[in-house]
Each structure stands twice: as structure tokens, then as C-alpha cells.
Length: 368
Image (cartoon, rainbow, N blue to C red; front, side, top):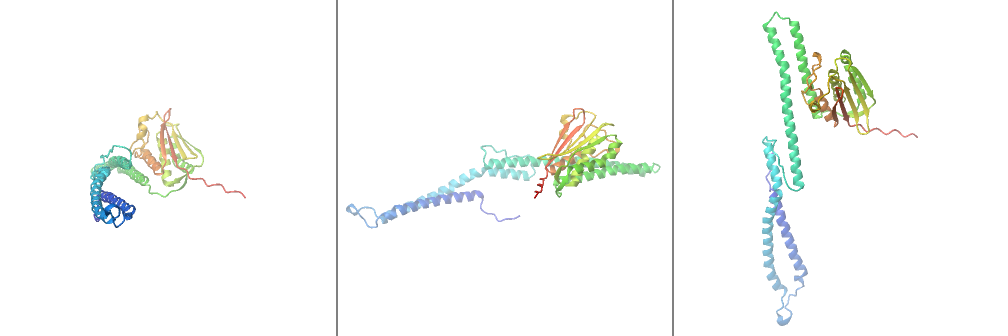
């Protein structure tokens, strides 16, 4: 947007400083006039009539006062320009850094030294903002590259199957159609997961009261056939726990957690426990499952990253997944201002604890 160019901040400070000195000098001269010169008589008095009078003093004092005011103005302009330059130097460094960043260099930092003051605080906040922007940009680039790679695989498989059907008319078309259906279903699931992840990251949803216990029951009922097929025991415990958010997103979060706990469980005879409770500061959801082996501690921070599937490859073909299960969980929790904690079980498996802000309880009605 084009704007009319005005005085720079440095010039404004300079003029303000010089004007302050000029007004101060004028006030001092006015004090001299009010409290000294006005009491000097106009007519000569004293010995031989040579005592000073007001007329002579004014004629002598006025040129000197004018010269002093001119010197104060010049000193104010020069000193104000120098002082303003020194005071605004940190702001100039921040502006130069902003211009560098605007040209695409997110790695640039101000790194201002010196005592903690307003400019140092601004520079530190600017550096922190750049670190977050650089981290987000790198994460988005990595996510886009991973998503492109993940989408390329089913598309490439579909192209191969179609080429095979075209070049080999004698091949069983029913088998090709079934494989195409499986591949396309995986591509659709991946696309829907990406859209859900983007929706959670943007926080573009309406917040309403949600009961975590009802959400947990709905999710476990939906996944009960899968658990029974794999001979996994599903246990839901706890009580009512209210939070504020999107029921659809929270349902997807709990469903992803429970499904992840089922498919990364023992081949048979494993257990998945879903526990919901309300505390004074948060509504808590815990999902715990048995597993083949202890999850390495260094692997835990990567499990909530997109397209990270861990080390256990126990999923069946119909539940291969797209590598976004825990990433969506983490994104939904973050969008609801909550926290997530992953801890390995000593005997194998994983314990996932989610804390969401609880809704304020309505006070009970008073009895008359």
C-alpha cells in the first residue's frame, strides 16, 4: 500500500529534543525577566547616576539571550540527531533483519547483545518468532515431501495395474479390480487424513461441550469387531469427563488411539484399556495396550510426526494405515490446547495420556 512519506523517527526525535532544549532555554530567560529585570528601575539611581537601569540591561541581555537560544537550538539538533541515532540503532538492526527475512532467509537472527531493555526484548522475541517460522516452514516442507511420496505410491501402483490390464487381456480382471480398489481406498484414506490434519492445525471448528467418556464408548464400539477379529480385549473404565471442543475431531482422535493400540498389539490375547477421568484441572484420557516389545525411548518423540509408523509391523493388509494416526492425535490435542504424553510399558506396549482443558462445572442449585 502506497503511503505519503513523512519524517523519519530519527528526525522526529531530533526535532523533539531540540524543541525541548529551546523551550527550556526560553523558560529560563523568562524566569530571569520576571524575577530580575522587571525589578530594575527604568531611571538611573545611585552614585553619580551610573547605576544600571532596565533599558541598558535589556539591550545588553537580549542579544546574548538570542545567541544562547540559537546555540541551544543548534546543540539540540546536533545532539538530538546523534542521540536518536544511537537509541534507534537496535531498531535499525531489527528492521534490517526483517528485510533479510522478507527476501527468504529465515535462518537470519538479530542476536542483540547488551542489557535487557525494551529493544533487547523486542529483538529476542523477533528471533524466537523466526525460529518458530523456520521450524514450521521446515516441517511443512518435510510434510509436503512425505505426503507427495505417500500419494505417489498408490498412484504408481494404479498405473501399473492399468497398464497390465491393457497389455494382458487374458489376465483375471476381477483380481486387478480388487487390487485397484484396495490401492484407491488407501489413497482416499490418506487424502482424508491429510484434510483432517489440516483442519485441526487451522483450528477451524466450533467449540462445544464434549463428554470424553461417551466419545470413548463410541470409539470402542466402532472398533470392537476389529478387536474381536484379532482376539484383543477392550476395556473401558472411568467416568464422565467434560471438555470443550469439536466432537468430530475428538472422536477421530480417540478412534485413532484405540485403533493404533489394537493393531500394534500382541497377535492374540492382548489387552487395550481405555480410561477416562475428570480432574480438577483437566479431563484425562489414557489408552494403554500390550505389545511385542518395549518401545525404545528415543523412538517416542517421532511417533507423533507425520508418516512415522514405529518399529512394530503387525498390521494386517486391511489396516495398513497411512502413517498419520498419532500425528492427527497430536494435532487435535494441540488444537484443543491440551497435552499428550507417550510412555513405554515395562512389559511391552505403550501408554498414551491426553489431558484436555475441562469445562467449568455449573454450580448446584440452592435449595429453598
